[in-house]
Length: 393
Image (cartoon, rainbow, N blue to C red; front, side, top):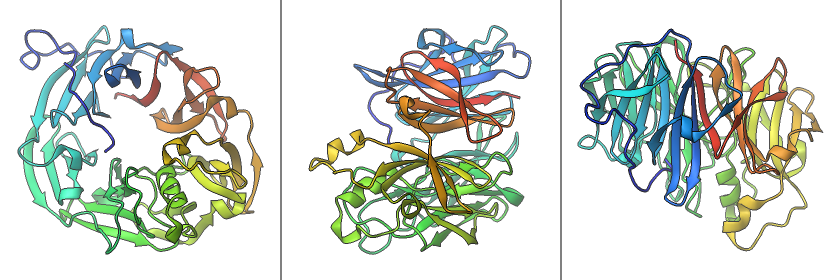
């Protein structure tokens, strides 16, 4: 939702962007997305590779433009362009050439800034969510034709809450249910919801409900996934942590918690950890990775002095720790300190991948999670941070 500015020309075939088709390559292509800060704003790039590369660079990738979200399903990448309010379908050719072959326009259906994720059920069934407007659009990803437009309950706004809610990531759960963790607008320093929230769309009943939990505040709009068993965790948001620092009336709200979310979108009533309390931290920045009882957490130490200017808050010094959520103990992890902020970007062959920005040496990497929560450097991203990785099937 935090995507804007100009639309740069997509790197399509010059004369016939949707009229032809490219010969598909063998299945198994690795898809990698990066974002690069330029004088014209943040640009998104997409590359296709026959195997995990050691390095990716924008000059070897396809320029997507600004205001982009990257998805893939089956053999195809799908790109949401928020400036054009269009969803583009791509094919990958024999030489790993990425070519747009079809698109759907949503500009007459919903406002682009209310976009909140694409979710795929099958080759014939997928959904685009505009829950801020209470709209869900079903489309066929094979034919790229609209199937149905649905009016549903919009994202809930509590009385007195000033920080707007949003969704951005979707997870397909049991029996066709799609889970969308609800986050909050980071740009407003007003009252925020003191309830966690997950939107659950039932693709069979074509309805949405919002599951809330009072054990922690509204968090981040992406789950952390335990790749050992598939468990999903609703995690804290650095954006809410920043708002909380400048909102005295909510300074004691539990914003640094961790909730387990079951595949039907309900919360595990027997699991909740106040990570901020366990770490005796000033604030929790992020839950990066989960492996069983071990949770990798980025946090701000308790004696940190917040700046008077909120614009300087994100420059805070942070630490990383491995929290044992059963014993409620932790140990600091210094090996990742040099990489700055680390965040999840996708999955390849059952292994989780992460990227970073703010490294001491100014370099960007993709990290692969091994059989523990330890992250190993796998790919160097030249010029910009990683944002997406997946294997096309």
